[in-house]
Length: 144
Image (cartoon, rainbow, N blue to C red; front, side, top):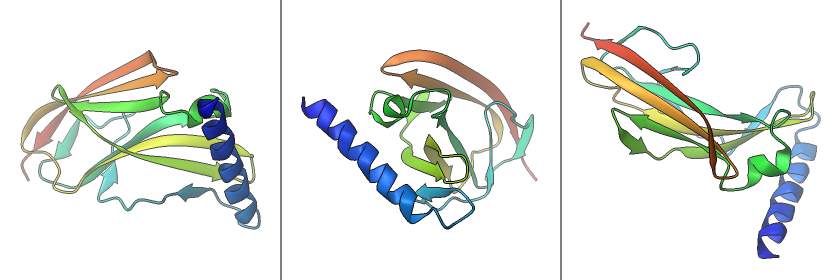
């Protein structure tokens, strides 16, 4: 019962926030955490990247492929590991008033980048607690 109430409150909050952005033609992200550097996307990663250079990873779910209520529960999330070490991300929700689509992302920021060498980034996508997809990439972080 409490779980259903939390989801209902979260959906209502998202809907209310979405109404506030309806006049804006672009998508709104909340909370809108600051990032540093370029984005590294796990599905289109670079083969090399400058060492010690800021970057961020933002991955998650577009809720037209995953039902919106599943996007909002804590057991649906993205997890990032770098060289086998689990990193905690910040949860962001994005509302696009034009398409009426909600998205849920996890943001992990690397303000100092990574040291020189080849590093392995593994992203795991969980839907309702089930690991539905893993994406692993190796990137050579090179000295300038």
